[in-house]
Length: 494
Image (cartoon, rainbow, N blue to C red; front, side, top):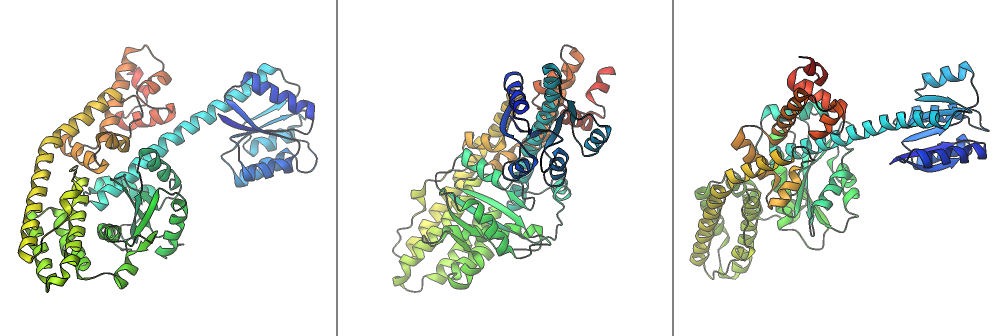
């Protein structure tokens, strides 16, 4: 619905115009019918409409005053003048201020409806484009986070993000990780929506019960804690966000994954009484030798999946920790935390781990060593088995889904939730299997089908646009030209 505000000081005219809109323009929702410009400005401040129909001459602030306010503070609002004043100076000034139409009273109902519907079509087209751009930016941001945090980067994939958001590779950034209670797709989309307008905040894909977020400091806000508190205000009000862990900031892009590891360490070893915790505070007050080893050694072995080196690193920790038997309970808990981190990384690869396999019961160093070897062997087997069975299968299932649903909205996150795999895992496997990311494949498929429909000559360009999954003909035309070097109309003539 197009939210519309009427501003007319004559009550009979105001009621008549509202009646015309209600009966003849069903796509419009009248959110207010006001009698002067001052009321209109106050309404716009609190609840801006998509469209405003305003008279020129009114007591106090007139219609041009209202339009001047819109031009300065809410330029996205489309304005139309409905007035009995036909002075050239009024029309000239209105045109200069970007008014979409100037209707003289009295006008026929058909003239009013035709003019308003023309503007409504323009508004709907812009809204569709904004929705499409929003989806593309959302995918771009989520993919950016996955590539950075999992060290799966390609310069040609990252560069458009830096250009679009005016980032520098040396710009300081850090990672927050949200821990959710009862995570679901709807909650994830709502959290992403909360951050859509903040260009220096990138929300990653939902992974299990966690959502990683990369935030970059700006030239205005260089204190990362201040930025963190702003971010937390947007999500802490939600009861589903049970904990927020914050890694330390780094000045180099390739180091951001360390901030992610730090945040994940805090999540796994957090105090249940806290709603959030900074890794810097954690390391100053609570971090023992285990956590330092995790960051410097064990985490790196997990990242590259060097199973033999990982096993040796855990053994070294074990030998350092087990000095006396009275510390075995503490050591078993620390081993549980290490293997919880390993299981988290395995989930990123599509491997589901039974939590019961993570516990340790050994009563001596030798028994714990056997348990470590057994669990490492089990995890290694599960990972190899999963990769063999799922790698090509997932990629081809995803490709088949795109082939069948290319004309619909296709979300990587929704599909990941459907297959109970991480979005990162699906994206990575698709790229490995077909040597292109799924967005490029989807775009190529849509444009090929559009070319076929254009050659068939049975549909209009607008119908073809909708038939291949686009909602905005202008955006479709730009994509088509980028892919083919010609606009759809030019292609039709070849």
